[in-house]
Image (tube, rainbow, N blue to C red; front, side, top):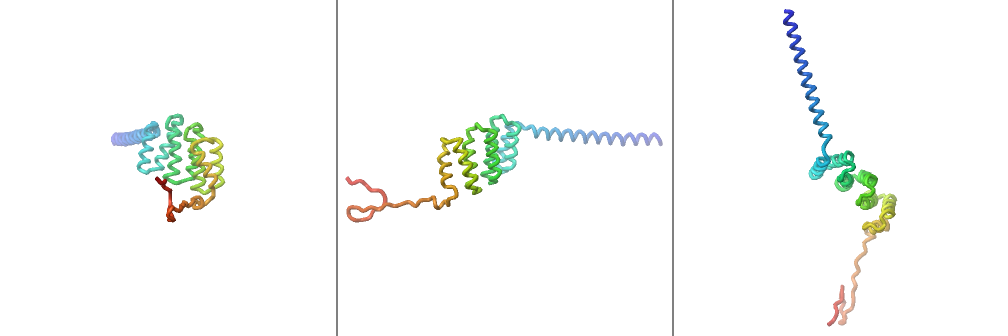
Length: 196
């Protein structure tokens, strides 16, 4: 009977040992999978971001773009990823405060990027047209003009400054119709035709 107890105990120990090994093996597999997910390549992240964007999973797209910016900051896609984060907040999610923060981050991370003028203009545009914060819009447009006085958006920034706080209906001029007398005494509208 003593021998049977020892064998019974040994069998229980072996079962527990086997179960522990299975649990440890499972944990190792899970850890490997999670560590592999965190090690997606830049191209895999870019593809995931684009797919999520196309499926209108905007937060997931932002997460993938953000991983590119953080993990591959010196890559060719990092600046585009940061710009797209801001654009998604601005256009799709219409979270204008987040868009402002992300556009500012873009200008800080990539100050020599060709998109910086557009980004600085958009900061003023959001303050003016989305948040109706005229003082901040004016400061943003002035900062843009100070840094990029001959940029293609400079005239637009100047116009925006001139029209800050004005009602759009004040800015629309009615079209004048010029009436002129014809030789026969009739009134004619529009352009004149040359006589032969």
